[in-house]
Image (cartoon, rainbow, N blue to C red; front, side, top):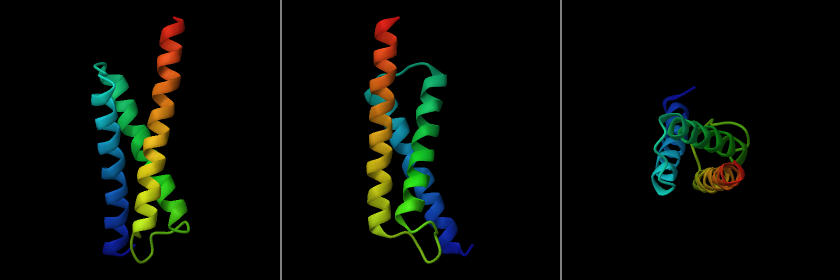
Length: 92
């Protein structure tokens, strides 16, 4: 891995963590376990989608397309998580 490869991966991790944290704020989640779960879910979704959109490799650097795909995928995964979580909580 070159410096730019590590930075691309770091950008995806920070992007996912930030979106997970913001999702926990918007959903008014107060349980620490749930907040950490959302941050981890955001990081995983962002890294996986960014890698797939960048042809499975970070050689060179992160493209704007893969950054956008990572952002969209992370947001979609977090929305799905909240939809499933609120439905499960409403049934209980």
